[in-house]
Each structure stands twice: as structure tokens, then as C-alpha cells.
Length: 290
Ligand code: GLN
Image 1 (cartoon, helix red, strand yellow):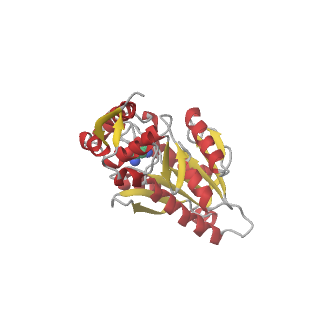
Image 2 (tube, helix red, strand yellow):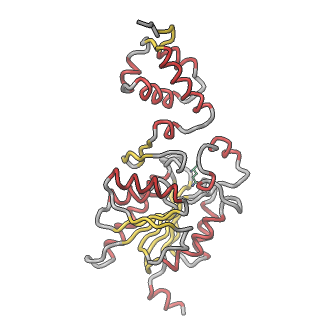
Image 3 (cartoon, helix red, strand yellow):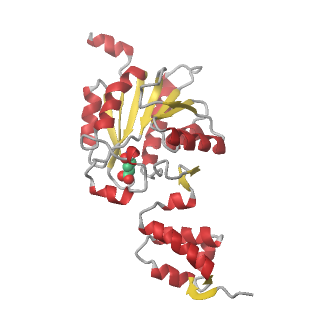
């Protein structure tokens, strides 16, 4: 029998790649050695065979090239849901859970003011992996959740996640609002908002540029959404947007300029303004201004 064992151990392999994120390395070990994280942590002296080392090196090479660990493992946890992800979609970020939290608060307020028999309709604009739409569908199964994306590749991933998680979402192929033919109570979006010359992009090269980069200092898509969302919102409905850590003031202005009221922002876990929202005035308030 061929002896594949080497001098390498779990501990020595982790040491060798000490400049990479420790948690990512542990996940790689779990995948390749097909074991739990507890096993990795409690067996630092387990020796690694040559085939195992070869596979580990292939994966660590990708981490050095800034391929997200979620693409290597093929999934990412978001709002407690295990989402399938690959190079076709942006990896869902924990920061985006702030958007979900605020959306749930707005949904609950609307539920209180709408009549009991009304089913609330929600739209996730530019859904990517489907993360936001699926989180909302999981939390508020009595709402009707819609999601759109202009990328058919993204829609394929989002559709697969909806099927795997058994969470119903109606998908639309649309470039922002161009092919959306109905109105909603709540529109949420995590659009691209990174400026084309932002140095952070160097670390994000494996993810789809169209999901990350926007002209006009990162504000082009946020502006378009603020300009067009009002026409597709029911009165008293909300538009909620994720944005960059320093874009809160700009997004508040965009919402106010486009007639939204009660404009507010919320910080993410890192303490940065991350989500800004506004409400479409009720019909009475609009006519009072005429
Ligand atoms: N929050 C992401 C990041 O900074 C960007 C997401 C986006 O552009 N919508 O990595």
C-alpha cells in the first residue's frame, strides 16, 4: 500500500498560511478533510496526506487570489438561511442583515395600518442570490415577495435558492424597474454602490463587477432607484436602500428630493450608516400639497 502521509499536520498547514484569515482556513480544512470544525480544533497534530495537501494548496491559492471562501464552499449563511452561491452572484454580507431588520419593522408597521385582509407585496430590486427576498419570505410568509434582476445568471441562482429553501418568491427579469408592471408596499434594494476608482475593489475582483460598481461616485443606481421607485409604490409604502458607509447623507438627499418623507438611516454592526429609507406620502398628504 502506498503511504501518502507527509510531515505536514493541520497545525503546520495553518501556520504556513498564517496571513490568510484563520476562519477561512478552518472552513477549507473542514471541506477537504470532510470533518467538523471541532475536529480541526481538537486534532492539530493530525497528519495530512499528499493528496489532501495538494487539494488544500489548490484552495489556499484561490484564497490568496481573493476568491471568497463562500465560492469555494458553494454556500453562504445569511439570516440563518444557507444560500447556494457562486461566481454569478455577490456573496451576501452580514451588513445586509441590517436592511432585512429595518424592512421587517416597516412591514410590521404597514400590517398595522393596512386592513387585515390586505396581503402586503414586497419587491427586492437586484436580488442577486435572492438573499434579501428569501429572508423576508422566511420571516413574513403571509406577504407576497417578488424579486428582480437584470442578470439571468443571478436569477438562476436566486431561483435555485428559492426552490432549495422552499420559500416562494415571484421572479422578474428586469433592469431595475423597466419590466416591472405592478405596485408594491415595500421596495428594498442592495444595489451596486462602489465608485469605479475605489481601492477596495482590488479585493473584490472575483465577484461580479455589475453587482458592485456604480458610476457617479457609486451613486448612479441609487439615484435611478430613488427617482423611479415612487411610481411603483403604494401610498404609505417604503423604499429601503443599502449604501456605502459614507453615502448616508447623499441617499437621504436623493430620497427627500424625490418626495419621500420620514427619511431615516440605520447603522450596521460596524457602526456605519448602511441603510436609508423613506416613505411615499399617503394620498391625503399629497392632495393637501396640491
Ligand atoms: N457591501 C459590499 C462591500 O462593500 C458592496 C455591496 C454593494 O455594492 N452592493 O463589499
